[in-house]
Length: 467
Image 1 (tube, helix red, strand yellow):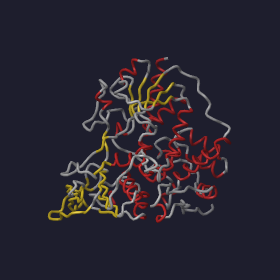
Image 2: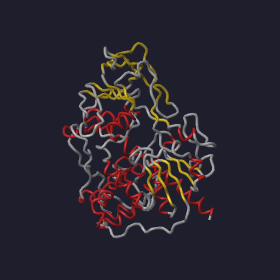
Image 3: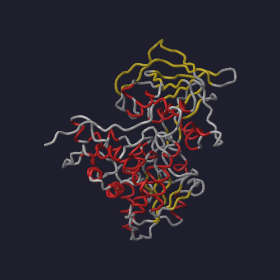
Image 4: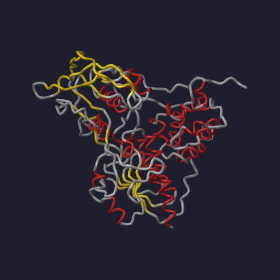
């Protein structure tokens, strides 16, 4: 048996000194030769544990094999039979804790770079679309109508699957562009908006109608949609209400939620001001509070917007950070300064009222809490000041309460998330399903996609029973 190549093919990237001055994508993608070399590491093991590790059940060994054989149209066909958003997943899905963690190669050394190969296939399709001769065959219409509320990863996935099943899908999106958090919450350097738009267009090409600037709970309620001819409703509105510290001075000018900061920077093109007319004022010393991917995104945006010093302030240690390792490494390479075991307790304003300093206290780690991470405990007498003139609070989000407040019979948790069956996505209200962050709270893109896929299957079963 030939000796296995256990070393990953590295992903080409922009040099850190260059990339901190632009918003272009950091990871540059594999060349055809690099993709084939990496794909050839797959040993095509018989049990396929990687598929079990994928929330949307992609036939990973088969699309990898197609790459090694040079049959790219077949790789696209296999990949998109289960995943309608491969260009997105290949860039932002945490494969290292899912399919790649389950990869047989991981028992010895580096797992197969499944995410990078998924991205490669998606990018190949986008560049060679006219050459692909086998579009999705239209499904015979069932005559059933489904309203999908929200066009983020859960809503797009549910819409694509339901459209493929032959149901008439209408997507209602509150913003002026589709994509949800993919469009407003992830910077261009990590997920180019052209990629998102291409995959939104694909979902629409399957037959889904897209209605923008449509806030359900205002223009129509869920009950009104059901009364107006929709046979089922899927709620995928995400979690867009920011969580704050509730610390003294947190309302000072110069302190942003990560939602506002990223929306103004990414969706409203603040990084292109004055070409676009939504400026994103930034100071010289920026502190970003939090340790997840949103915190990394915010800090790296601040650097590119012109900040001279950018800090990540996190109350636990590096080992407990929930952000993807790749994003932490990118941030460190770019010069982001990490203040671990540090917790902000208040903010001070200057003469014009703008934030000028952040009161902090050092922390130490105690026993693990319900999240499995060690609980941070304040160290007495360790208070200190950080001089900053911009602060971004990236502590997570809760769902917007509008849907719950305008929908009778829809049970919610104490955190405002919608109560839904983990397997089917069925809520306590008849004919209504939900999935993604509106059910789980802020989580990953791929977990939301998995929830959308499971809900679509459950809705399809329900609709067939009506026939």
